Image 1 (tube, rainbow, N blue to C red):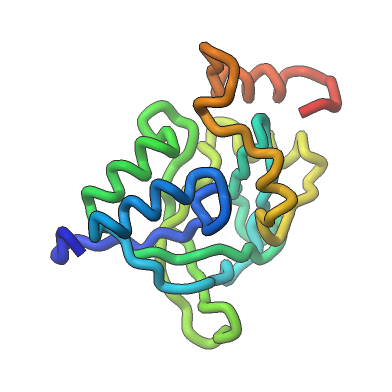
Image 2 (image 1 turned 135 degrees about the horizontal axis):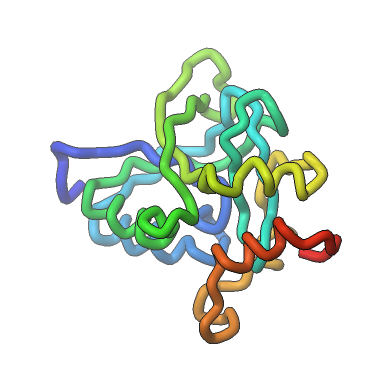
Length: 174
């Protein structure tokens, strides 16, 4: 790792996973020695995982709701973390990086303390309710087909504005 003194464990459950729309960033971090793949993991406790506007997956910080969620674990340098935080919109309130416990798939006995990107608290719980409190166990290949990359969204698209509008609208469409 480029910055061996600082490593953060990051659980990816959506578009950063292998085979999904933003995995190119993880691949670049690996090439730059700013990330290492540590394996397939599952959340220790259930959490809601829903798909929002533009096919964006959101893990919601409501412990005990939803399902145990499958994903991938990476060790990421501080430099890599800055790039992930930028993609996830930490500074604008799109996601927030919070602690979560995982176990390696097939090895339920050993818990790993890590962090994941959760839907920001300003809308996460309302999104869960708006989605009928029905969540996923995994953002898989089929779900990934609905993801619209940032560069493919309409010019001037503001995801936070769109989320706010969706949550205040009674329409069933997402």
